[in-house]
Amino acid sequence: MALKDLKGAPGEDASRKSLARLIEAVQTHRVWLRRLGVAASLIIVSVSIIIFGRTLMKIDFAQFESAFRATSADQIFLAFGFASTSYLALTGYDALALRHLGAKVPYPLTALASFTSYAISFTLGFPLVTGGAVRFWIYGPAGLSAGKIASLTVVAGVTFWLGMGLVLASGFLFDAGAIGEINQLAVWANRAIGLALIAVLAAYLIWVARMRRQGRGVLLHFRLPGPMLTLGQTALGVVDVCAAAGALYALLPTGHGIGFFAFAALYSFAAMLGIASHSPGGLGVFEATMIKGVGGSADRLLAALLLFRVIYYIVPFVAALALLGAHEAVRRWRSLSEAIEKANLEDD
Image 1 (spheres, one colour):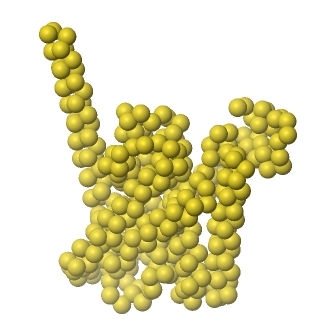
Image 2 (cartoon, helix red, strand yellow):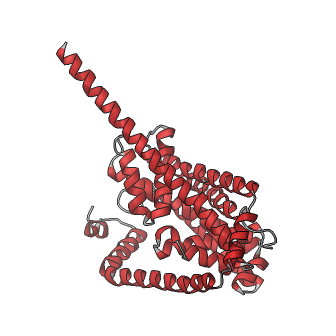
Image 3 (cartoon, helix red, strand yellow):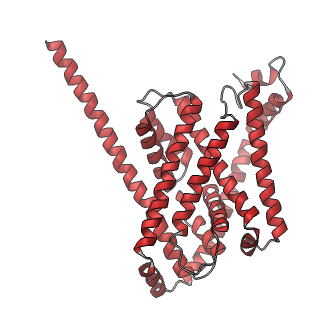
């Protein structure tokens, strides 16, 4: 359906007209919006480089090495456990999206596609491109169309942002004092921000419920999950984000003095800035935000952040490449075996 059809369909309601006007405005000003996005990314990266660069210049490498040695095996084991929980929750993103789209894919294949796409996109950045390409590579031979794979990627992305939003809101609401020590705002102001975020999430839930009840798509034929599935998305997103934050929290040096609610909110905010910067894995931006927010010994915190990078990014990235190679080898071997068997039957 073309944009003019979307705008001119008889009997359309006000919300459909508003959507058409929004699409038209985005198309009209897409050049300026792209420039604005690039400018925002450059500002985030520039500020982060300044903060991170100043931190690195003050690093005492003797203390940095000592901080590495002080990290216990229990901390590393716990961090791996939390990271595994996070990636396990991420497989649920694709499973929920496939259920919403009515596509039947065996869970082992779903888990493979989800894990590899996130492990690669987290490390390389540009998740819609890198993650989408990996999903197409795996789901395509399984019979999913390019349209369904694109829809799956969008629904999975919504799950991530719902979880991130609720974790951020919870930090502002339930640990407003600790958040205040980070952003220097009054307790009432932080709680107001938390309530505003909760209101946005509630408004989204009401909106998708209304769209579901009216049987309408958000754009053309694309429909977002209904309220019950949205609640499931949010819960799954919270598990993922809290587990990922827990992996870094477990590696923090003793005596950091920050509660988990505040830390998870800070982690969510740092991850959001990393995504907005478009740098691979939010590298530099994420670290600068965490160092500025947590405070304390930069040497010890940087050691924890580097270990976290290895555990949550590098190890899964290498594992994902190995799994993709093995999956492709098995798939090609099966194709070759089927071709040989077919040729033998024809000869007989």
